[in-house]
Length: 149
Image 1: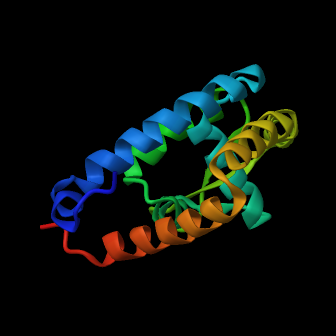
Image 2: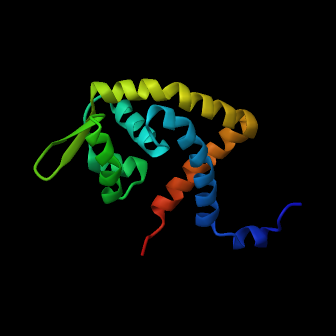
């Protein structure tokens, strides 16, 4: 049974999206554990990889919608494990780059991620996922434009 539009409006967007995120992240985290990574760490490594060189932490935080302090906490175990290196860029700016070990970690994790992604998309439906993925990009854009105060 479909909800009325007033019932849909009364559901908290943040809570609903968080529940969905936690649910799917739990599955991906379990799959990526074989590579020693969490979903967040894997996403972060892939974002750095796409840059094909060092990236400023401020740019990475903005791209991935991270608070800077959360980004630093997420990077700590990756630095500790030698998957990334953080260096100074300009005065008061830091940048991060993948190490060879980080590249190998992505290579190890990629088949695990691909299997999880394929199973999810198969179950959810490819067309439905493509539509939802596009809507989620819109949600990020809308949220970025909304005042935080």
